[in-house]
Length: 308
Length: 296
Image: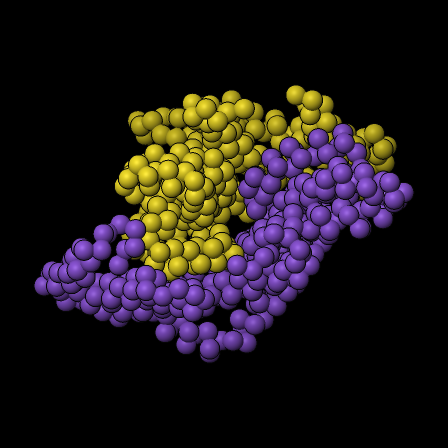
């Protein structure tokens, strides 16, 4: 089972140990025995797969088996122990709820992600890049902005949500404002650092070509800054979603993912809450994946993008 | 040290923009009030009034500082009530502590769990392949936004007080530590690992004498990310659950009753807490790296 820990001659010890644990658990409580059995069985399959085979197939299979095991355990535990759906609904219940209420969830998704988060993300990141370009022209400003920006980026900016909702009303505009406030400084710091990334030699070379500021910006420094800019953009995808959803807790029209979560928690309709969380998770991964794809396409030359 | 003047300049510019914003945003109310009473105000009067409103749209930095001072230095942290010494809900230190305690408890739990999982991932290929992709993917999920639900669910199970909030903090500091520590534990190069192999060092010895020391810089970097996330997590966790004490509760009541100065002072307290926690970790990092001979 374990490649690093156990010497070869003791291989039988782990299955034996696992089997006895399952048997003892089953004697104590049959349900516990079943759960332990599923867990250890899946674990053994994964251990065997990881130890025996190499290649991309294993790289996909093992995490999938692990994820499926967790889901199965969730379903089995909820079923066997009769957990109230108010506390923890089974995955099958959540999927059913998701399938029934796709139109509501789609409307929430549009309101929160497409309007609030995306608008704020574009405005905030765009403004940050522009400010970074301005700051970059002066050494003095760079030295001042970097520490201040780093400091602000570590602060709980999401706390400005109640203020911004007060200022911009309950519509998606206030959510976009919260997102702008959240993404601006991380993006600014990353872009300023990125613009400093090109080497002195390269800049001197551009200088010998008599390149203007804009020419060396577009041909040398922005391309060199792209890995940093994309790092910032990737961090900001998650921040944008958090900002948009949390801002809805403070006031929203009767649509939106934060609104839905808040309302359905109040009604103890946990399956709907979990369906919304599922949408948020999908949106987060999808958004991040999209930015990562664009990064791969634009910075194909960077060492971090090499295929293994 | 040479960046002191630039930093001060940038801070001064931000404060100046803030003051200008206060005047601009509070102006409407002042003018409106004056019109109702049929008064003509000069520009100087308007500006003076915008800077000292009771419920301004945007309080000035001076007002926020005064409120911060009044609710920290001006109020005792404890007061006597029904013959018992209790926390004083007027003191911002009391609220800050209500938020900091679960943050730190959760941070410690999350960090320890994260280090353990990272050690497992480095030593076991099945765990590496199975768990690591999920750990990375989970970073892209807006977990923070669903923190309140976790609190509600845990309350329904009967867990209240410190534990639910600290579970959120633990979860949020857990993944940065896992990802950072896996990187750190793998950072020794092949030469060093081979050397320990020629010494016939066991896996445990390699872990204690090579991998863990090598991972310290990575650990501190992810700890700083983790503690900031943990603090935000606790504050957000307090928001929609109607918590009575804590910085998040302060934000919420402020927003219910339009007490903008209270919101801003709670926000500043949260910022100060975050800055102190990160500074504390930085100091620990410097001390540790110096003891290890890595300091510059």
